[in-house]
Image (cartoon, rainbow, N blue to C red; front, side):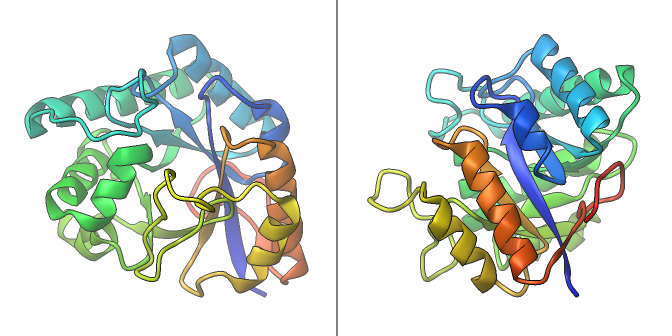
Length: 241
């Protein structure tokens, strides 16, 4: 029986985060780039602790206007400093409620760029290595540039699949602007869980997707139907099944 993690991107000010945390085994929390502030980070950290869900950072381009979904022409040093601040702010909020960060997952345009671009991949990996006293494992698409370059930075990679996003033949995510890129049918999500990339160790449901709670429940049911055991992919608090 294979163990897999079910994760959600949360703390973004939309959807029913508390209910979703009862379904997933890890969460990546917005930390001030595309969404989130000190109050939302503290609330998310407390809820993760209470739910027994592993808590990760979800940094992004500092872009609230477009929710972190467009590439910004920020100098690399400035972007690195902002990403470090985001992760450290979440870590401080988590520490105040007695939990630690277990992973890092870039958000939106930064995630997509880091999957295919060496400079962006190195940047994300540097942040994962340097933000805290210990390196944070990074969630990334299998076969991506992040996955290929991670060893250079001493970073562990957790290969990620997506429950509610379509993928291209090359394994990247279909742009949201294209038809069918976002999957909103719970039955389709449940069926997809039986056909995951064999390399995947975590499966993502976006907290801002319409009917995210229904999709998370469908993904969980589909994973269990496929014979998976659910547990966090990274060390730390979690709830297995």
